Image 1 (cartoon, helix red, strand yellow):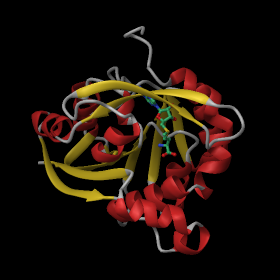
Image 2: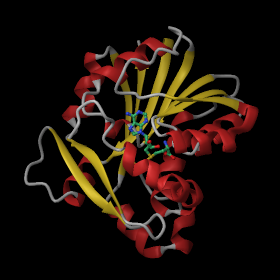
Image 3: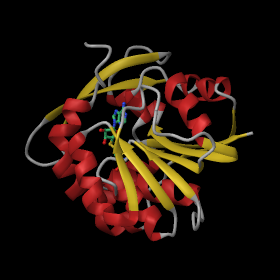
Image 4: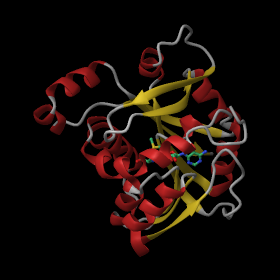
Length: 239
Ligand SMILES: C[S@@+](CC[C@H](N)C(=O)[O-])C[C@H]1O[C@@H](n2cnc3c(N)ncnc32)[C@H](O)[C@@H]1O
């Protein structure tokens, strides 16, 4: 593994188009992660929001539709292109890697940093958390989702629960091409302690729950994800 190259870049370059087309209709994204994130973000009207690891811009477009001023970034050039198409002139989309300092940020510029299912791909969270801290105004909020440690532990069939562990899996649910997606499994203390070390105060942790609308669409997924949350949503504040 090349330590300097973002681990999931190749995978998301392959997945970009199908992810952009399919994510909103998928149980895990459209019916679980999107509602969880939107609920935790609350009213964003008139707020400046940074979307870190924006993918094809689904959250960024939602934020803009709710009256937020959005800057979004992703490490995958294809995702950036798709996010620009989706967002049009309603926000800015940049190519940047959150495992490195974010040179485009003005200190205290943002009211909220939002990040959906993206920070998992960075091994050392101290780097993005320092940048998010810098980006936020005093009392600004960081709202983000990650793979739930219990679900990820089972999904990756790991032998131990602790620490941060490199893991990979084959994704079959986004189009016909099967793509190996590298990732990092992370235990709960490896999520909370880096936040505290970066100076954030944790406000809320939520195990995601499926939207009621999933019941009629895919009962099996609804039942499975009610028992076992695939994601966790964390909210922290720059005290
Ligand atoms: C599961 S997708 C989520 C995309 C989007 N946030 C959403 O929920 O629709 C993960 C995204 O994180 C991006 N990503 C991975 N590593 C990154 C890094 N080091 N810096 C910025 N983005 C990264 C990927 O390119 C991909 O678009």
